[in-house]
Image 1 (cartoon, helix red, strand yellow):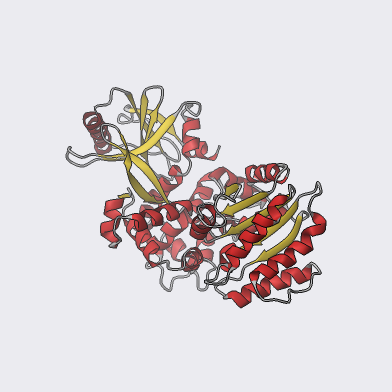
Image 2 (cartoon, one colour):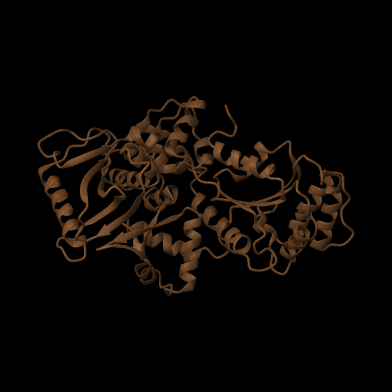
Length: 473
């Protein structure tokens, strides 16, 4: 099995940076468990000249001890002084024989945010090391990463101090797609069909570490119970660890996530502010940006007469977090909760919500299935303002060829059948959209389901379909 399965694009990007002919300061970021450390350790293991990792939740002395041990492993004695600038000077002397040659000299600092203890002087020392020495050598490649994505963006990528504009490249590592998840399971000899893979994806969201915990003999319900519901399951407290690893003070962020999990269609900033008591100012803007960069939420435009780009809706995007917040209170003292509650209203409701989130993460596959991946497309949502009853369309594809796809997303474990009432509701929603937006574009109703639509007497308004197989391509 390819130990770096699913990261071909990232590996090509790393290769281009290794042989770019200039010093590179590379920031690698992404949520916890997405595989950042694994990517660098496995792909560059023969090229890393110095590697050190911060110690989670510890102070300056523990971080210095980790750095000292890393120097010692390379055969360099510890610095006499106990200041960060002396540690980096020791690193400079250690690496001096390896700079100025053709081969890349890779420095890998993992969990970089852990080193930034208040008043420790780590960031100024790193700044001094890079600006006065390391950046002078074309083969020098400094790679830093950390799960605290908000820190990586605020203190490093958007830093306005000594490291301002020093980062030369950013790599944002995302979860696996459905297609990558299928291939990963195939290589691990986990024999699930596409519906089963998608059902498990609606629990994990394609996080590689979570996928790696599945046993070869597990069914989907067994895997979910083993990983989340049984006593001491490995992911039972994952949400708390995830929040703690990302933010020093996670409470206001979890308030936003708690508000969004209730409103599947998303919320405006004013609605989020009202629900969380966080004033709608710069602080809320910064928090929403950080949550979006961490892949927890997504923002998208709305449309009235025109696309409104200054009134975004925010929607919870992280599938595992959504799962945890939905089921955490429902799973008490039942090691087989998922197996025991299959086809109950709670799980069926969840599947409908989760399928919508999965679809939203595969919009490029929808465009490909509709044959419009070569056309410029805006996508956004729409809420009715004047018509009654209120209508909501979660996904609209606004195409440069003067066509609008109104996408209806429906989860079903079999072929989906449109009832008379559903057909009337879809027609009414389309008419409300036409009336309120006053669009002159052609409107196509697109149904997105796992197994397509039953061709009964009520399906004739459907112009196009996207099915589960399309999302795997």
